[in-house]
Structures are given as C-alpha cells and as structure tokens.
Length: 520
Image 1 (cartoon, rainbow, N blue to C red):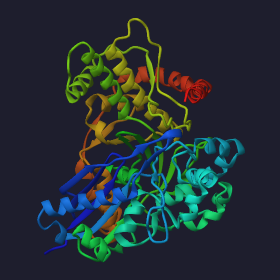
Image 2: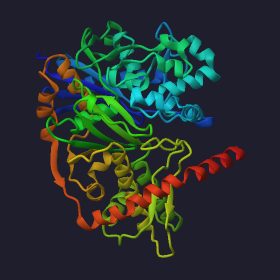
Image 3: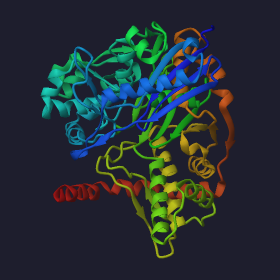
Image 4: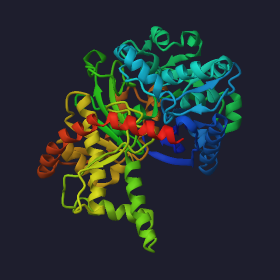
C-alpha cells in the first residue's frame, strides 16, 4: 500500500487533535479529545504530563482504528503543541513534576525584577522575545529560587510537543523556534549561554535539549511507541515548530514576494508579520512579543500575542445568557453568539472602549503586565447591552492594531485563521481597524497543517516550503473583506485613545493586585 498520508498531532491547551492529510494537503481524517489542566494558588496552572501522553495515544488510536488503512498509509508523523511552559523529565524520561503551562503567572515577580535590572532588555537583543511569566526562562528561575529540589531531579527541560516527541522517538529535543526565543538568538538560531547566567540558572545548563529543525531532521518511531499507537515502527517523526508558528505557516503567513500578516483569533490572539531575512528585523524600543525562527531558511516571524481573544466574546455572551436566565429564559450559547454577532454591525457606533485583558494572567502583547485586567471606559446611561458587545469586538480589533503597530510596517494584507475567522462582523471590523484587506483561510486546522507541511519537506514529499504553500495553503484562501471607510475613520479616532488609556492604567492595576493579595 502506498505511503501517501502525513499524520499530525496538535496538542493544544484545550484540545488534543490528530489529523491525516494526503500529500496535496487535503484533510482526510481526524480525531480529538479535550485536554485538561489545573489551576492553583499564586497563579499556578499545570498539567499532568503522563495523562497528556495517554490522551495523545488514545487520539492516535482512535484515528487509526476508525479509519481503515490510515496507519499503513502513513508516510510521516508530525507533532506540534501549545508553546512556552516547562515540562521536566528525569534521566529515564519520567516526569518529575506537573508541567507548568503558558497560563502560569507564578514567575511574574521575577520578570519585574529582570525588567528593573535591565536584564530583560539585554535578553531581548538576542531572543527578540519580551521576557514574560509564560517563558521557560522565568519559570526555571522561579523554580531555582523556590523549589530547587524539583530541578535537582530533572535531566531535561522540555515543552509540550517536545515531551510527546520524546515518547514517540526517544529523543530529547526542542524545535529551533521555541529553543531560540527562550534561550537563544534569532539571528544565529543557536543557544546563548549567557542567558542562563543572567537568569541565575547557569547550574541548570544541562537541562537544555538539542535544537532540531523539523524540516530537515526526523527520527524514527520507537517499537514501544509503535505498539502503543498502532503506527509502524520506524515511521519518520518530524518535530514541528511551536503551534503558533505552525498555524501561521498553515494559515498563509508565508507568501514569497508579498508583505502579508496573519492573525490567529482563537482563545488567544496571535498577530504576525513575516520577515524574509533575520537581518531585516527591527526590534521595538521596549521588549515585547516574540521573534521566531520561521521554518524557512533565514526567515523570521515577528509576533505579538494577546493573552485572550475570543475568550472575551465568550465572557460577554455568557453575561447575556445569565441575564436572560435571571429573567426566566434559557438561551442556547450558539444561538446567543450567532444573534450577537449578527447585531454587532447594526449597533449605532458609540465611543465606549474596552480593553480585552480578561484573563487573570494579565497581558503579554504588545506589553507585558501580569496585573492587567479588562475594562470598559466611557459608559453612559444610553449604553445598551449590544453596545457592550460591540465594544468587546472593537476592543479585540484595536488590540490587534496595537500589536501590529509594535512590529513596525503595516502588512498589505492580513490572513485570518482560528475560530473567530468565521465571524463576518469580526473580519469587517479587523479590516477597517487595520485599513487593509482581510482574507480568511478555509483551513480549519492550520496548526496541524503547518506541522504536516514541515514533515512533507523533511521526507522529500515536496521539494521546499514554497511548493508546499502552493499545494497546501493557497487553495484554501478565500476572497478578501475590504475596509469600510466610515469604520476606518472611527477606529483612527479611537485607537490613540485606546492606547493612551491602557498606558495610564498600570498603577491602578498594581493597586488592585495588592488589594486582591490582601484579601486572600
């Protein structure tokens, strides 16, 4: 039987998915199950590593057992997953503690210290990443200070996809993208040893695994993993880039010869610019965002990530449902979301502002502040509930504009992916806020597709990434949504006020954080 399928694991924060693609990029099968994590005191958010592997095996089994011939047709297996965080294993590859996730904010105080001392800015010149509590660097520094016995038991520090790769291949590695934006230099794509000195974790240097480029290197599936998953032993496994980089690749960020951006509007918001050569990257004066080695020779993806995107919409929809329930009416969530989405564009635009910093972890793009919180500004007695919903939508697209502004030049077109890409209202508002056309990708699972594209290049199924884009990405791109002139003028008026208001808030956020701490 022909080996004509590439399987891709995408282990996200909410869902673990496995998809099968043919060599032309068509999705032929999929399986998924919810992921789970726990929250704890002090901003702790962690995940059971052993369960994550068991769930991944179960999803792989479900895919192969419910789709006859998929296992025998597999030409490669790709793996990507949620980024940042710290997944520690000992010499035998056994977890030494629950994994710290990117949502964990325990290391926020260390980030503040490194910012005050100038270390954060010094690291930024190498990593292009604005050190935050999500990063493995700050999390390891917290552990060194508070739980050194955990690090004493550890042999390797990994991320989610790296943990799965270890179980699949027996190899301890991390991808170039994630390894570099934490501990390296985006220009050289190598580790910078001094970063461990600056973070006061030099004695843990041995924890850093080798850097692997999943477009060039694969390792074979071990016999043990083959028995567990039902896939053939020796199957080439490609370690994909972190999920956001794979999503950007699968969503259309790489389009040779064009200056495009990509916004992934899901639970989080990721706004990206493609830079063909690392030497052309201009870092912002203040550390922030991510500068990621893209899975194309010499290329860079500059990213500014907001902690929460559609979570804000979920929240305001639930507020509306709660109000209806209090009045004796039960409204289905999907019906409520559809109704609000349809009415948003018909709401008479007011001047209410909303900052979408709804998560308790604060914000990380285009600024870093663990104390940041969501807020409405400018409400009057004329403000209706639909006006509040509209303000939330406006807040999301103004936050995207804030992120792109921090990365320099404006893209000529923005490709949009993620769950909110299906919203007609959001696409029009984003196009108008940015002043450029927005094009949706019909690709439902761009992260898994990006990882599979990397594997396709690695095994020679396509000669290079440009050809992969022609076959896998461009057929999925739909027509553009053009900016509305009146809406653009309104956003041009609101944007400087939006920025001025959030720049004035840190002292208030700090006081609120202190008050919360006193009550716990």
